[in-house]
Image 1 (tube, one colour):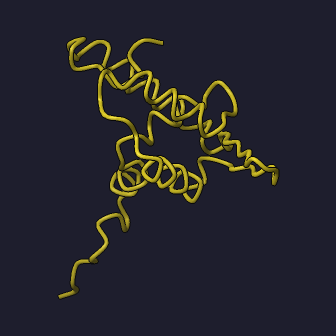
Image 2 (cartoon, one colour):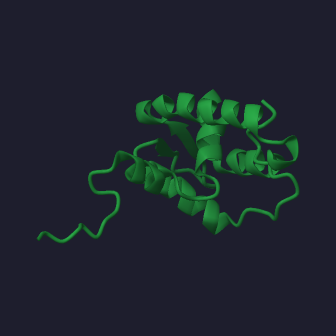
Length: 125
């Protein structure tokens, strides 16, 4: 009898999708970029704005989330090569195709979750 594969994402698109978007901020970052490119500080400010009193986002954590989204093909990172550093993030075509999925999640949350539970920054758009 063949052994089960050790990677749960193998062959299962739901598991692969879950692995790609795992992380506290990834969905919110993609949602914030739906309106156009943003710089690192603008993304960070947007996440803090919708945090509902949560602790500040560590720069290392935000950088890791942005890097993972870029590696997944959802974001493009443009470094302008100037001092002080100027870096801009924008959604790729793949990232833009993900926005309606997040909108559906947001709409479901608005219909089925109590307002107190919705302190994630995507509630009030």
